[in-house]
Length: 171
Image 1 (tube, rainbow, N blue to C red):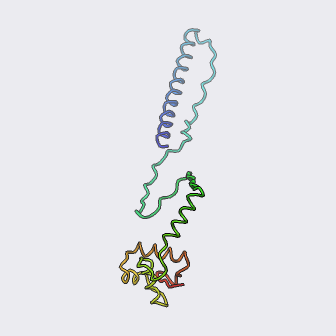
Image 2 (cartoon, rainbow, N blue to C red; image 1 turned 120 degrees about the vertical axis):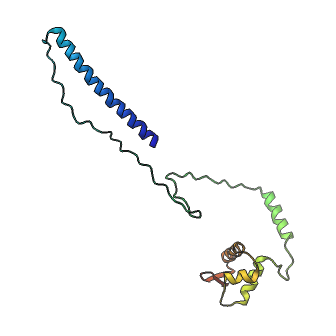
Image 3 (cartoon, rainbow, N blue to C red; image 1 turned 90 degrees about the horizontal axis):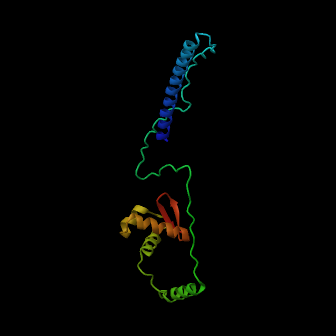
């Protein structure tokens, strides 16, 4: 855009220079005709010089650089192209096989395994009024990302509910 504006300014200057040269040549031509015919040539009065209009294009100023923090999102572009996601369809045979494998792979009912989710839920059982994320981190030994993922998943399933900011309890 800036280059286009610069190019237009250059063209405008060249056109103004050519118009000045054209006026000078026309004046010389009139003088030559007068000299050749002995001042008998009637000429139109030279049009009064009007104030030269400046280009209608306003000078383009460089846009100020945006300072963007690392974790903030940049402003969206005017036109965004959304890609269509095409879901792959599976044949009924494959889904039937997958279901059969999943049901056969289930663990026997009894003592729940020591998964991180089960650890978190067991800790929450002890605290009836709710437990803070910081305490969950201390007691379970898991990192923040693991705990937030477990809490999100459990709240979606309806196993836990949010009591206050950063405090959760069993539903």
